Length: 393
Image (cartoon, rainbow, N blue to C red; front, side, top):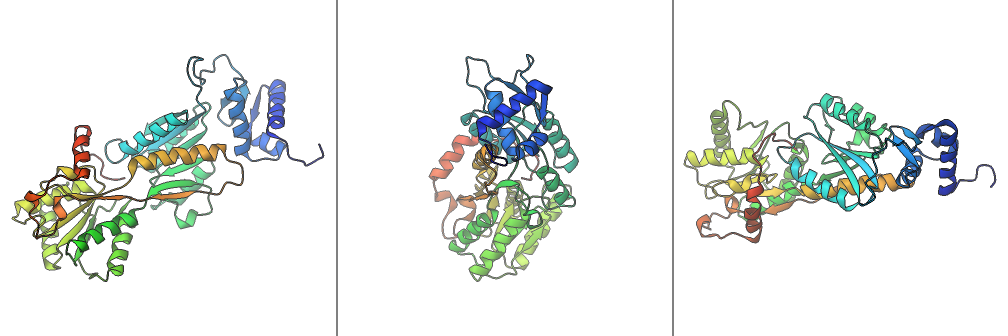
């Protein structure tokens, strides 16, 4: 073999084993320089050797097979191919379905998924990531950091520099960080908001408002989709718009009264509300004030975790949460196995509109409408429904 000619995989692994026999341990970064390949390629070689029971993977490298190595499954069961970590900001609201999707896909791909829950605080999320990085044999991470606030760019750069590949779940890589090799998968909330606007327009509404919770990560894309749909459909752009709603906080009655007054003052007959616990509270308050839903006010919720519990049941945009979890695992495993030329993947998945009684045309009596197929599905899921907690994605 001539100097500079690339080594085949089996040759690289022989070199790795030779160094391990000589030194007892090896570093992924050092091996990458010596072999003239990327760190991802070396990690893939180490993974293959570990699956054969020849080495023990450790953070940043490998050692000769240790008798204390328990990362391999018993001989009676299938051997996990990879070990990945996942850090989510909540296990109360929105995220359980994403986690369920990730677990199902990890099991299908014979991958061990280590889950850690954090808060929405960036420092806490970083602590949870660092804890997972201390896990022997960790191959990659799925995380959901803040990507828009102060310090977000520094966090993304830190994640990109980690010794394992990282995939962002239900988060987008901002333009300022577009050069980073971070894969991502997120719901296409612009499309979701446009679906809501088009549905309300077809129901006869022309003045369609938007109420959002300011700290919700979906807020920006939802607003962009709402505004774009108004322009596309040539609808009035001066309908009711509120940002920073907290209809579940002290002073909620006064805040909702002001919201209803804004709707009346701007002649807004339909409103999209993010997230749906806020929509549920607004609907109840409107009914208590003698406002008929949907005859006087049509409501579409965004998230669809609790919207079906409204009276009347609230139409909602449902992000593909389980699919986001599944796709995040697929992206991460593909990145772990990929060669050096694999392009960065930034995936968006389309939400669905689930029509219920809160947005029916005023000419239709809600009491006369039976459950749709989607509602039958909702009813089947009701027993498994979780109470709303942290109302951000």
